[in-house]
Image (cartoon, rainbow, N blue to C red; front, side):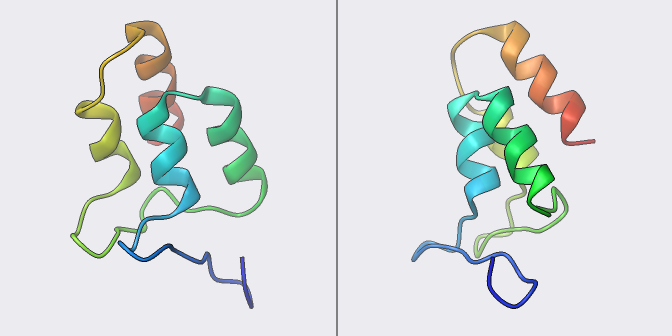
Length: 70
């Protein structure tokens, strides 16, 4: 975070969107603890919850992250 606003990488994605896509509930919690917003879209208009929908992996983790992002 820089000056109260979350920074993004070159494609415009935040750490929260990566944590959601990778299926890491602990990292999602950490991002929220650091002030991340699940409402903030990236440069393509996708929100962190959108990345959970397109990932594979453990369904229980995806469900937990989806709930956290609401």
